[in-house]
Length: 618
Image (cartoon, rainbow, N blue to C red; front, side, top):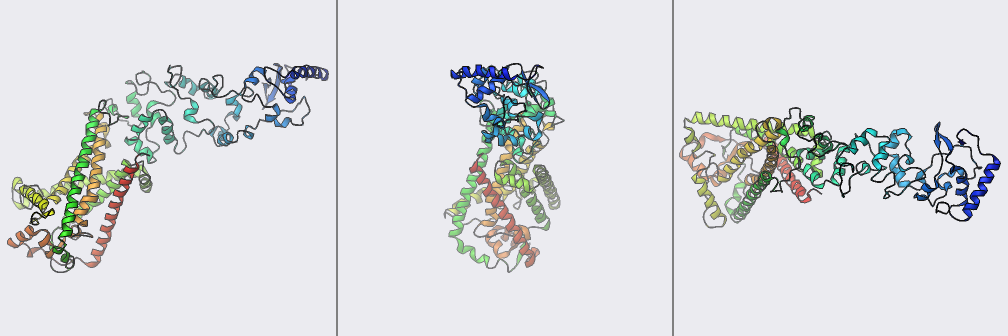
């Protein structure tokens, strides 16, 4: 129903008179500089009156159309009936309330996005296109006068989101605060225009990182190198992201006293997730790059030191392996017959039940650590995300990782206890016990055997007379000790960062993360390639050596593989004391299946790691 400030509707004579006036004007072809059709002329006869009032949803609203505003609109060339289609065939002047305009008739894509948005699904204030775009004065987006232009959109959104708009106007993203020629983000840059989704939906926090990354590329890249970023990729939505540290709409420079990360507020900000946070703990570098030597020299040299260790160790071991394979293949006539007698004859107990069980427990813990740890390290890879889901999500996977770490540390302590027990039983001093020929400690004989092995690889000398433990076995042993110490200590720093930063600088967390990650990668790569070759994939051992599982080795194999140990046992009359029967076939079959599964899992993980490294962060 239309009225004019309480007066009745136009009389028939007044209506006809006004219509004649507009007819004369429109015959000239211009109204406000824009040609109008006869239908528009008819509408404007009433709707150009500034006193015209209508009703909508029980409320009175102005239904006046400003000709100047309409002429500047992107819809200036359209007839009124193009949008108000229920006017077609209606008697004028109409008294019925018009239906809401269906913008989707022309803007189908935008309307489909809007129907799935939070504004539509929640029915916020009966939200309509005109609430954001205006009605008749819809101006192009790139026009500063537009309601959704960069200069006005925060005010437009602020009609409903007043508190948010006030906070945004005080933030570093607001043109009021940041006077810069660079483009500043607006509401739609972060929240999208028509396809606005709920902020608490699944994956919203990850999508938010993508939005921030459009402008803050380096910051987001370095974030995903941190533990927070890696586990976010694995689906842990509760982990801290940009807004948890920097704020949401009230982001301010760190130098500003009211910033969430200012020296006055940073501890409280970190304490939201880390209740025991303190000022030294906040020295952790959330966006540090270990490639920047000038800004982060400690991280730079730590990273490249670990990279040199990883590449150097694996390169040397690979060359050693290749030379060994070539020599074994050339001398296969010396060991091929051993495969025919491997399950017959006399057997020597090489490893006790205690040693085999300890190795088995260590094997399980290492596999748990390898699978869960590499899934976190290569969190961007699809297989890592699959592993995370298979373990039940990040939290259960992190729990398994901690269990594996504690188990391996337990194995380490038990081994030290056993070493002390054997030392006490031997009656030797620690120095003599460590320097014993059957000790796992390096000695001058290992250097000699290493050099003679190199000569043998290239057919420059005979095969060395190896003793109980060879130099590569000792290297494997000390690599485990080194790994447990280095990975374990840095792992504790990462597990309890608040405690360790009470007496160490916060940057130590970054250093520990680099060492822990790269040393773990070295351990996994070495164990599942070089160690697997040394013990199982050598041509003279292939397809696998079961000695560490059964504890047994045949006399014939021992005479070939460890001739000096065999000769010493004969000389000391100890060989016959350790004779054993063959391992039960049913048990041996089960062991082979288990060992084969372990080999397959290890090699598969190596393949996935190589794939992830080639794939990169794409």
